[in-house]
Length: 333
Image (cartoon, rainbow, N blue to C red; front, side, top):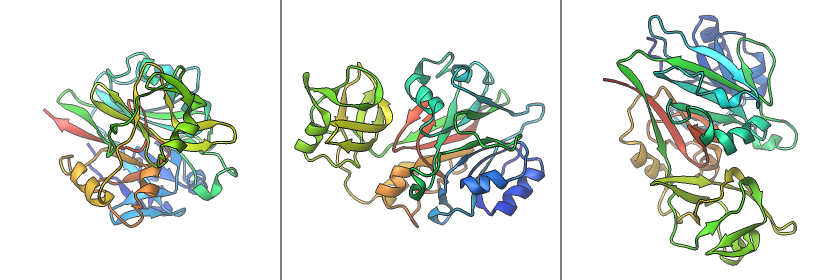
């Protein structure tokens, strides 16, 4: 087994790791992602990272996650389009985990966000990963990309995956760190799934969601939160367009769920993350955090406990998440 930590390195160091034959998951700005040599890796575009010294924005650095190898068990790199994405768990190892990277705002991103919970074998096998993005200055000028490192081209509508088999005495443990909880406000419900809505039901009454959020003075940095059998799942607000009477989200809302606006956060985010991550294993085989946490929590130069990783346009812990941290560790038993 290789036991290398996740790390933030220069493109030259990343190239050396690739050329040495390591299997890696890589996060870097598109220009760096394009220039890396071919090898056993997958990658996605993002220039925001949580490094060992704190949050950093860098177009000239690479965050690498070494993928563990065990004797006789070889990780398998593959990719999926919209037609095959539902098979990601079917093709996963019986004991192990899968690491997926999806390009934001693509058809595969939307399909995974809305349908992953219904994919065959989902929740039977651990799936973690993240949604590739771009520098916020490039919005409207560039699209998020991923790369199957065995090939040279960048992809904007394909999910890249590493399926990682583990020996029987080791299992993958997935943890979600969410600093947000449902508030005590009105119950919100939606009649259809989607990334944007005009109307919703507030305590059973149909209203304009944009007008409702304005009326209650909602802070759009706070997500809507649904309670999935005790798990708090965020839906982050991307934009509120009062002229078009429309609210856009970074993840989909679903019918049949009760949402509430998140409880306003009290205190400082850095110690809150420190407390929330204190019980996590020190060495992560994979971790990532949300770009919205990076921005709204002002994490530049601040740390999130011992947890490092790319700051992403969405997180995957089985299903798509927003404004969370995802952490995977390997447990021996």
